[in-house]
Length: 99
Image (spheres, rainbow, N blue to C red):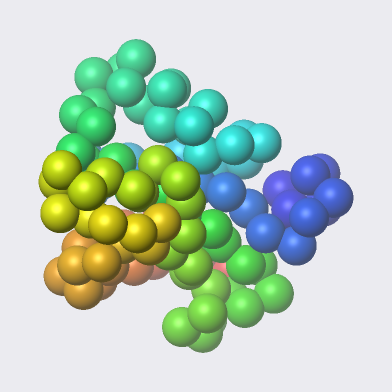
């Protein structure tokens, strides 16, 4: 997928409540819109980047997306500030993506 986008990363959005992972869009916002149209709640969606060359390492998942910037929900950065949510996202990614 990253080769299709001429980029070394793959953008993804995770719905942590429904345990859904959407990948392979040009922007996190496109994946977010797809999930919202399918019934996801905004507060459950988190944007991440996957670095295929880092598969199997801690650096495989990067928490960086404009859709994560939600100060009213307590997330004041483009990252995922809550370490528990980060762990849940990593778990969902590991369930969905296999080498």
